[in-house]
Length: 317
Ligand code: SAM
Ligand code: SF4
Image 1 (cartoon, rainbow, N blue to C red):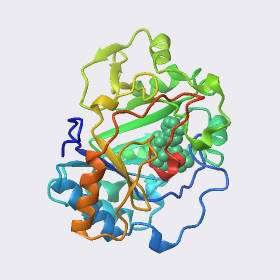
Image 2: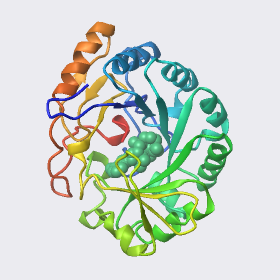
Image 3: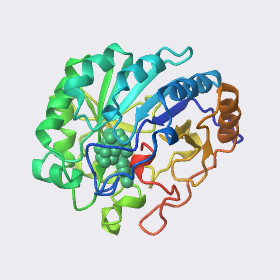
C-alpha cells in the first residue's frame, strides 16, 4: 500500500516478545521487562492474521524480532505459518544468536530465509559488559549453527558506540574475510535505556570508512545499508545511518509490537492498536497506520531523543 507521501510500504517488522535472555545496555533496563498479562500480548493466531492482512496490502517481507524472538517456545511454528502466508516472499529473523545451536536448523526448515545476528565486540569481557550477562562463546556457537543451517544470507549487526567499539571497526569488518557474512555497522540511536552513553558515543558511520580506506563500494541491494567490500572478502560491509543520513524518504516499513501496536515510525509516539481485532478490523487499522506514516523521525541526537516512548526491546529495532 502507498502512504500519503507516495512511499510503497512492503516490509513489516514484528516484535514477538519484549523479553530477552540478554540485557544490552543501549536497549533495555538491567531488571528486564515488567510482567505483562498473557491476554495483553499478541498470540500466535493474531500474529498470523496480522501477516495475512499485511500481505493483502502489498507487504511481502516480514522480519521477526524482539526482545529475543528465540525465547518464544512457539517460534518455529510462528515462522512456519508466517512463511506460508500467500504473498509473503521473505521471512527474516533478527536474533542475538545465543539459542541458535538448538533452533537454527528448525528455523531454516520452517522457511526463514535470512538471519541477522547482533554482535558489538570481539572481546569476551566487553561482550559480557555490553550485554550485562552474555558469554561470547555462546554467541560463537550460535554463529556457527547459523552458518551450518544454510540460510540464504547471514548478517552480523554491530551498534557503533564511541569509546566502546570504535577501536574494533577493523576487527569486526575482518569477520567478512573469515566467514561468508555481511558485517553491518548501525549508528547508536538515542532511545530510552541507553542513558549511560554520553554525547561522544554518537559516532557517525563515516568513521568506518575512515578506518577502512581500502573498501570498495558495492551497488545497493534494496536495503537501507550503504554497501562496501574489503578486497578478497566473502561478504559485504554495510553502513546504516539512521542519525546522520536518515532514510525516511525511502522508508518502506512499519512495525508491530508484541502488545499489538502498529508503529508507522520507529521513533514516533504514534501507535495504532490491532490487539483483539479480527481480520477486517485489523485491515482498517493497518490502512490508517500506513496512510499516516510520518515524513521523518525528526532530529535525533544526544539532546533530541527518540519520541518512541519505549525501549528498543519493546519495538524490535
Ligand atoms: N534480540 C535481537 C538482537 O539483539 O538481535 C533482536 C532485537 S534487538 C532490539 C534488534 C537490533 O536493535 C539489534 O541489532 C540491536 O543491536 C539494535 N539496537 C537496540 N538498541 C539500539 C539502539 N539504541 N541504537 C541502535 N540499535 C539498537
Ligand atoms: Fe536483547 Fe537484542 Fe536488546 Fe540485546 S539488543 S537486550 S539481545 S533485544
